[in-house]
Amino acid sequence: MKIYCSGIGGIGLSAYAALQKSCGHEILGSDRSESELLNDLRSQDISVALNQDGTFLPEDLDLFVYSEAIPRDAPERLRAEELGVKSISYFQALGEFSRDYTVLAVCGTHGKSSTTAMAARVLIDSGIDPTIVVGTKLVELNGRNWRKGESDFFLLEACEYRRSFLNLSPNVVLLTNADGDHFDAFDSIEDYQKAFVDFLDLVPMDGAIYTHLSDPDCAKIASEVTRTPVHDVDIFPLPNLSVPGDHMRQNGQLVLGLAEHLGIEQESALISLKQYNGCWRRMELVGTTAADIPVIDDYAHHPREVQATIAAAREAHTGKRLVCVFQPHMHDRTIKLYKEFLQCFRGADLLLLTDVYDARSDVETDRVDMEKFVQDIRENSGVDARYSGDLSQTKSLLANEVLQKGDILLCMGAGDITSMARSFVADY
Image (cartoon, rainbow, N blue to C red):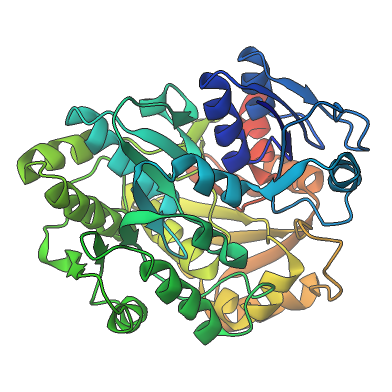
């Protein structure tokens, strides 16, 4: 087939595109800006354009796949409609691709990528040869976010946004947690958690579900599952990892559950987990400045993720001054989780808040008052917080006024703050 991927630079759609290319299909696509992922796709002979006005779509196209970030009235979607080409979302496409596999799906509000990454390590080490799609880049996958295996196992992340994961056919599910997110797509926490119940109900009777039943949200969801056994991973030991954080060790327990289901000996799985060294944008040490200041980059953008990441940084760097830079991701998320954000930065010695990363400017109307946000964080958490402006201003402030020898710099957010973290190492 000739397949066009609109938004091909996304972490999920880029993996799908590469997988389809490895199966012999002709792939082309577009995105709005350059990235390492696009360069990697080009190295695989995938044609990528930065023009998304619809003119790059060939008339002999067989399938048009779009990222959830591409709105319905986007020129490329309208052009595909004009051409009469079958058009489906990324998760619909992933569901079609994976349907004939035994699907091992990792879902949850937080920890999906890290848990999938750990599971990838265990499965590969054990001789299982899985196909993999993960929302980050892994050393185990030669720095990529996908792998084409020869077995019938497909390990993947299952995203709940707009109920996307309901397009999948899961055989085994690992549920990390479900405390709520994406309230632009869900009416309430009850509506959000009902989506997880619906997803778990897709697991067949001979499948399995693994989660932490000590987690009230997971226990509530598990109690509503109608036909498939739900296993409590809290019975497994907290594995000894090479990466810090209780949340990471709890993710490891989920992988031990999966290993048991697949007949992998626990001791073997524990050895593989110990050798797991983390992944891209998850407590990733991107380098050290000339002043010997470690710079850590993390994807955390939800209060619970931020809290866990700060705790992990504290564990790994005891006694150091922890300077955190946080780029809020979307006005809507920040406003709806406002109270939680006021508390989650405890443990940071100094917090810089950048401008909000405006991921969905086409649908957001309310705006965060950043000065008030900073003041409210100070009053509610006792953390020294400052508003630092855009990423360029933030970078300058860090270099010229904030950082001191012996500090740890932790950059967090799901937007383009990762570029600032990496350039900071290069420039200072």
